[in-house]
Amino acid sequence: MNSFEINKIITAILVTILVVFGIGKLSNIIFDKEDKNIIAYKVEAPEGLEVQASAEASIDISALLAIGDIAHGEKQFKKCKACHSIKQGGGNKIGPKLWNVMFRPVGAITDYKYSKALSTYGKEWSWEEMNGFLIKPSTWIKGNKMGFAGLKNEKDRASVLLYLNQNSDNPKTLP
Image 1 (cartoon, rainbow, N blue to C red):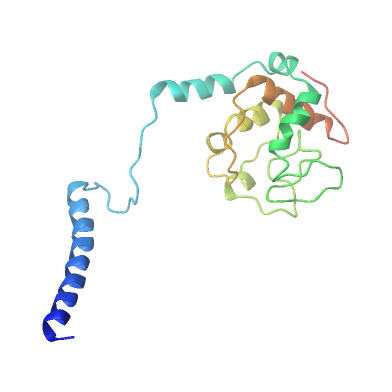
Image 2 (image 1 turned 180 degrees about the horizontal axis):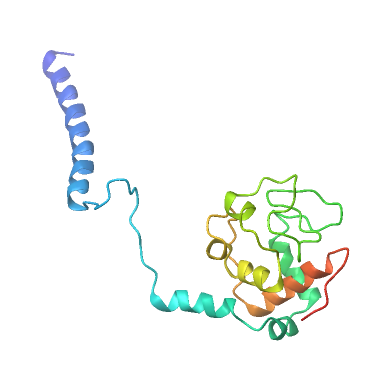
C-alpha cells in the first residue's frame, strides 16, 4: 500500500468524523433550545385528550361498578398477571402483590420497592383512586414506574375493580 492509498483512507475517516459531528452541531443551531438543560422537546397533547381523561376519572363509581362482572374481571386480570400476583399469600413479582389491595394505603407493601411517586402518594386504593389509576397509570400518579397503558373500556375497568375487591380477606360492600 503506497502513501497515496493511506492518505485516502485517513481523509475518508476524517471527513466521516467531521460530517457526524457537523450534523450534530448544525442541528443544535437549527433547533436552538431556550433552556440548555433540557434534553428533549415537549410535545403538547391535543386539548380534547386531557379533558377526556379527567371526565373519565370523575365518573359515578356506583354506576360504573353496576356494569362490571367479576368473571369478566378475572379474564381482564390476565393482562395484570404477568407482573402481579392476586393469590392469597402470593409474592411480589415485577409489581407488588394485589391480594387485599382495595382500600389499603398506596405503597403499603413493605417487602416491595415502590417508586418514589407511589411511596409518597399518601392516599388509599379507594374505588375512585383505583379506577383513575387503571384508566392510565402514568397520568394518574405521575412518576410511577408501572408501564401499563391502562384500561380504556369502562366495563373492563369496572370488572377488574370488582375482581380486585373480591380477592381480599374482607371484600368491601359496593357503593
